[in-house]
Length: 457
Image (cartoon, rainbow, N blue to C red; front, top):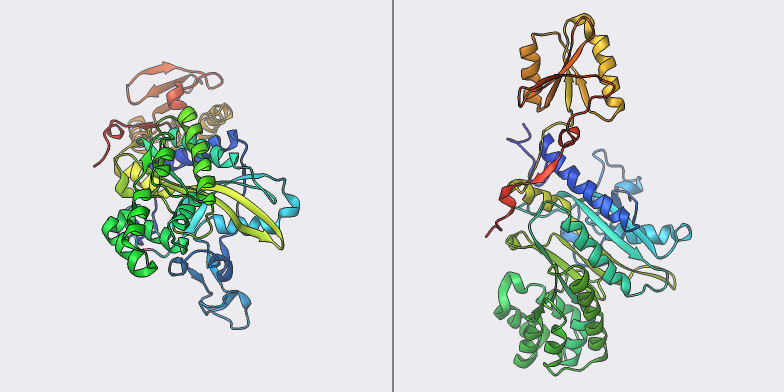
């Protein structure tokens, strides 16, 4: 029923699809933990004031209210303008900033965390955009200061994590807000946030319309608008972008700082993640809290899907009095990735259920003995079910086939055991205390399919 009358923007997976999603999540967890990131989970709701204090995303927030609203209940404030009203979080970065401030006394800094949770945005559903979706974030947060080297490390960790997934080739497109803001100031454009918002629309509306926005909304001259677009047009797979920026003849201290930082990221990526990272000076990121490195990631051949992983450096998102907690982090759009994997048949689960063995019943009295066999198999990590009825063996085999269970176990009245691979028809003598299926059948395997090779136009 969910397939024919689904609620738009709230995806649900069939069991075999969910297995692909779990494979993605387990892979990300493994890579993150290998790099020393610990897992946390934050509450699903924040106050409206907390959510809207950075960036312009008020139209995307889902407010929270009770069906039987009580005016006296502070958790059921109705007014959108009420900063104490509750709303579902639209990302994991803002809740994480609040979490760091509230738990600073219990955390060891620099604090490394990963977080995999649902988030909600009131967007128009379309391919790659849902109203309820899963994100996987990693962040490193410091107390007072955070060495820039973490910006480099975060990019490399994400490149490793994405490389382990059953997805097409990808590119991390990296820029630096200091570089961009310093350049704009160097050419006389002081409303750097406004310029960044305009540049952020470049791929959607094109350079001519962006130039018009810069001139009409920010008062840029033709020359200033063209210089801003020239900067945004620089894209290299190595550190040659440095010379290209310098050739534009703009000088500014902040520009030089950002140029140096971006050079460090790209230089490390060329060595440790070759071909996965590019310096792309058109990347701006719309949210206000980014202060340095900014990242967006696309699948090669699937660029119309949009960014599958984004984030960057934020030096002032979290603070407590005069105490600041600078950080850097990236967020993977898990649901967006899984949707593309499934729609393009990029990966498949080897079966639709975890079960490897169905223990058949010879008669109704054999159920207890069958449970003993199943317990022995499960004790060695073999997922096992027991048939519910002592039907003809042919029906029990058909049941296993419909479920996607590869092996059926038989026990005769003398206690002899045999196991049948219903795919090949091979049936052999077996002992529950030592028998194991081939390694590829022991657990559900997720493999990249042939369709993953050619990129989609």
